Length: 407
Image (cartoon, rainbow, N blue to C red; front, side):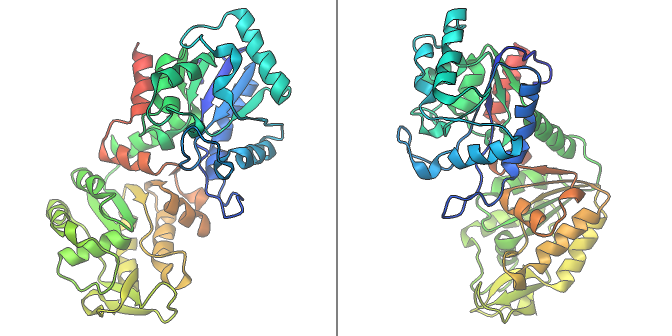
């Protein structure tokens, strides 16, 4: 984006504004909205005639408006951050002036008509929020007709949504193929630079910490990382499956017994330090938490955090690292009795001199909870794309931009 002349041009920015909200619709974490601001501000400062921003939010049924998944609260929040009006355009894909012009450069009269239409219906702001792109039929299927309509809206297409780069959809992939000019936004570029630095030529030892509730969603990532890293640390429900693979009793703990064989393969491929002691309870709301050896977990207990000896060993692993990649908490950190493991890990990474890269929704929530935002070298806003990049997969949205750059 920084290499493209934006003066007097219509700029379409695909952002990732898929933020968590409570039952009333209030935004509970605006990290992704704040991360989208630099691209928007840059386009405005460079003199773009019109800046259009869209994103998905949730998983609405295509072709149907759903107030609960409207970008209205995001537009209001963004307006507060930017201190300017951010009108919301609802049926933006059916703007009259672009019908029948898909994939073609807009003639000057049609260009004026488009700008006049938008200003007439949505005020005089140079910045518009385009309603949830998944309300448009064909978005998830990467429909060519829809993608051409999106491309016809703008002079410059900008993808600044690394969090959705692993999906080939009309606003993330198709529009990049058909737009007159397609480029990466500053957040997309920063994400790729940080991940490349962590994996392409990392300072050794490279330590990857992959945790969370289900090993199945991260199994291929673990298998791929086992071949790249010097040490692989697993936590949370994932660690329970690995403990089960070692024949340890895990009681009622969350685990996936059918993946024990896969866990054993990973254990054979690289060193995976597992907890020696754990914090157990009868359930998430049980305040009578106990610390036990992993050999002594009772049949009616759940492993909900790592114990003090395991925390000490994990701190040592982190202290010796040259590069740290962190995705996922090592315990149920939302509950005070089971937060110590994740807090210890977070503070150890913050204190480390290693290059640290953290990503994923729960990881970001833990970083905020323990107040270490300024001590992590790079915090990725992505979840699925972060994991697929770690796995070594090609991300469709990135591939589309690379193809345009090469062409």
